[in-house]
Image (cartoon, rainbow, N blue to C red; front, side):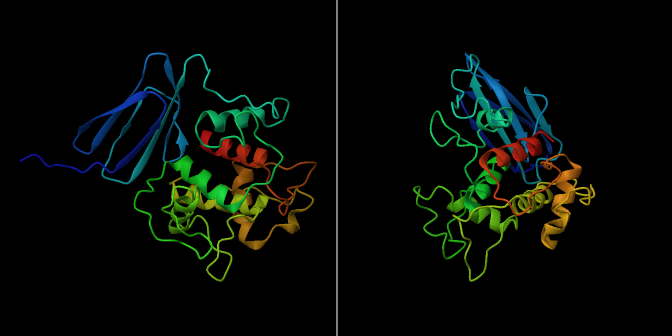
Length: 262
């Protein structure tokens, strides 16, 4: 009698196209087929970008995994043009995260690259990168993150997922402080935990002593920043890490783009 294996790969897609699967035992081969006038803009497995955009084969689909496929128009007419960011140093990374459905603008034509990023937004971005299945999350994770099944609460389920996976934590008294701004070292710590959860190799380390302000790095973020610097996810500015500085939307877009590209 043939053994039937349960496919645990969670697939999400955006844009016009199909993602089909042929399963043979534990192996699941996925094929990405754009609709007429569309192409595969990007695809991710467990948060890491695929270099081949025609399909992907999981050798063991009985293990929890995610597959995200983004279809975009061939002529690029569906891509956002952020008029406030065209000459910004981070424009290529801003365009990348926007085109791949990770980080949208503050309007159809603006990205607000120098604006701060909140804790709720970072949790949401990491959830999107991974392609998390949020359907089972109904319980409010913190006293200040409530009514998460209400569609008007755009970040609630994302925070619940990130908290359950120990990617983010609270700030005390059962609170999350969703509107609190994220510092550069806090962002590095969240991304480091996310990398471990997603199965990335997090062993690489680089010395921080070359940065003039390395002593400002708090103990909880040392490993994370050493890892982020070693993997060229974060770099200094004028010889400084600025660990306590608020992470701007442009900086977040850049770190996330570098992470996803591997």
